[in-house]
Length: 228
Length: 196
Image (cartoon, rainbow over all chains, first blue to last red; front, side, top):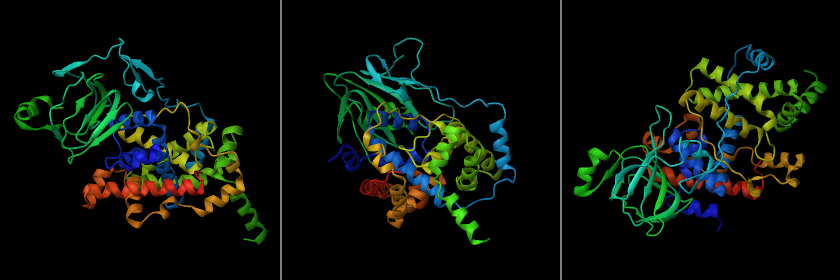
């Protein structure tokens, strides 16, 4: 079984998210985690390419020909001949090492700190987070989350969708074990309490489109304040 | 229209879009651009209208996309994508810039795995045209339910969760249809060895 087939066979697989990414339907934070995931797993890229090819087929073969403005071609040719318009350049970023973690290029672009260390903020015992700045109006929130060795995240479920990509170390929960480059997609059907590896701890890129719901007495205390 | 003219037109049409892009990229060939424009501009506008853009916005964005096609044609790699696929991705990214005001995070693939590259042998134009005939439209290989979901994703610019809500289909069903659909399309391409 190839790596790509294993990914497709996972019941919690992320193929629907890859389709959303290829269509351009994800917000910035979600696009960031998927682009980083693909960078770490080149075989996943073939699924995105399949989607893009389907998009190209739809464009070429299923889009009726709408009338364009009569002078549309002339207008574009005039712009070609005119002054070079400033091109929207993608900020180019190389992969880099950040707190001894290799960060793939798409994420590195978002981690341009003045210093070299992530400005971690304490969350709970053994848990730190850094909220990654994204454009205003982005629905989802992107965070780096650092778990000290053997730390257990309080049990929770999800109102929306939680995408977790492991950047360093590993964690396990009721659904399996996840190491560097693995992605966990949890929606409202998943109730879990992730535990970081006892030796390495774990650093993840986590994207949520709605606050988590923590369970139990601890949860009733955490939910109003943590807004995780 | 007389018969010889008709034949001549067909010959012109047989220059592939990939070849047109190559001519634009290498020689700034305006005739090639005009031909590509005449084919794609009305389709791009129609695509953008189906994405919910207003008429004037769709027109502006279409012109931006075509200008970007001209400016970036030198970067186009025939071994990596069909012309329609490449133009689709430009339109998608411009629409994200425009509607959502962010620059789409793109994966970095330092080494492009060989499986994504069209081999030189397959790059033979005749073979390629044959392959294109056998699977002109990838979506035709899918069940109607699978194809409907994928069409909706592209044309309505909605993530799978929103589609499940709107169609009142359980999220799990939507996910498994998409999963099976993508696997099917990937297998089809693998069999035909026709990524392009």
